[in-house]
Length: 209
Image (cartoon, rainbow, N blue to C red; front, side, top):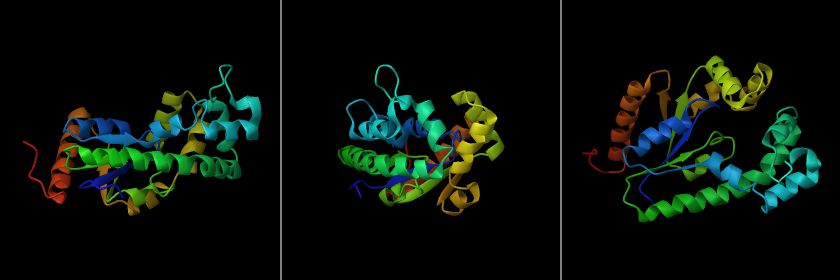
């Protein structure tokens, strides 16, 4: 585990507001790395993972410029659990390696703790990289509505995406902390401030001034 005071793993189902929460922590001076960003990096043109994906599925998952057609790939893997497992076997080790490097880079900073934001924190084994887990929780019906709207998919595909993730009950059972993201911006800021004070105390530092 990278040698910094404390690493908090932030997770939650799709469209639960993980990035919004991370930005709220950033306003307290807390750095973060997003596994989704790293996941996009490892399938950029020239990356071994993209080559493996193209070899398996052919041009139907590539855009004219050679970049990954994420929507086409998503339709394949969310319709077939075996294909999803294959894709995870290709991408997850590469994502984990880069996340470890990014977290290690935080050791030279002066932040009391850092965040690893990952939708698959538990499923991918990335929880082994963190000291404590924070689950961002919203009702599944809200996840489905947000996903359909945000990603321009129909409700059935949004439901399939949610169903493919760890069940909400199991995710909550594995959490050290839970943030209910059922509030407005001011309410969320207050809840994040409370957690920031708690994490600074766990890191052995006084509250932020």
